[in-house]
Length: 61
Length: 318
Image 1 (tube, chains in turn brown, blue):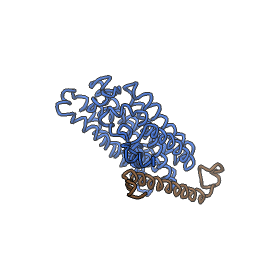
Image 2 (cartoon, rainbow over the protein chains, first blue to last red; image 1 turned 45 degrees about the vertical axis):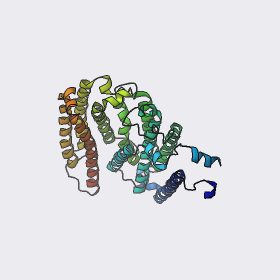
Image 3 (cartoon, helix red, strand yellow; image 1 turned 90 degrees about the vertical axis):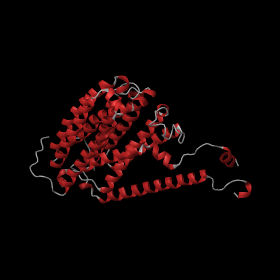
Image 4 (cartoon, rainbow over the protein chains, first blue to last red; image 1 turned 30 degrees about the vertical axis):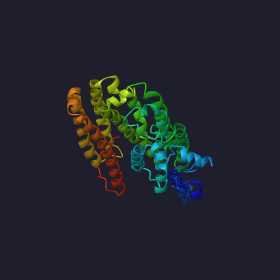
């Protein structure tokens, strides 16, 4: 869009909308990173040491 | 074309990201994060820092979601009260249906993720907390009984219990006492506020204790709940999460809390009005410090135990 159309390309609403989209994008990226980190942690722990794992038993300690 | 026309002519506000964050009651979330973290770190089962972070995040988002649902339901009374008129819905920054959608979505997300990150028991407790705050407190009790805050306070008391459940997968006396501490602390804390914000609640027709039962009865009940609070706070000192630091801090704070409650009990409404509710405001402020410092003391005890610096021979009765 050009200025000759009488439309301001940088309306305050556009700035706010961009800010909202950027923030939401960051939240989603952080969520992906969190899932990744938790997956790595859970997979790196042997099930025999995981008290929440279904096959955990005291004898295995 | 249509979009450009709308921008030029429309005065309608489109919410920014911060408006949605405000919907989640960030100040309440801070308290939830803190108490849940204390419950989690005080538990005798160590939790990996990444899992602990993820779990606390889920609890915080769940609390925020219930806050959004509360704001959606209370949008009519929020517009009437001075304290809440600036909230995102009454101020026109976020629409009611948007708040409802965010509340429901985040509720489900937080519970499901907590089940995956930690365990089903903790997730179930979080789901119950959201239900309790949004449905039992906001929709049912808040507008129907002067004891609204007593039962509704349970919602705010669950986070340390959920934190404990993340670590241990269950509940125990320690987590029940931490729950009890916040649960019994809530009525005197909120009633002190209601004493000097009485007009706000009156305008919104919310039957807070000073509105429906009067000033004298509220002062009597503040003292009653404060007397109940002391043994709960002190018993924690003689459990696994307590110790000499907690005992010392709790003794001082509980003495202060009781003195404040007796002071309020002995004051008349006229005396309070004469000095613009000075003692009530002081008691309200002190009650915030009281809860915060007690939980800090529990955290300190957990840290001392982690580094084997706890006092040997400290009696653990229960």
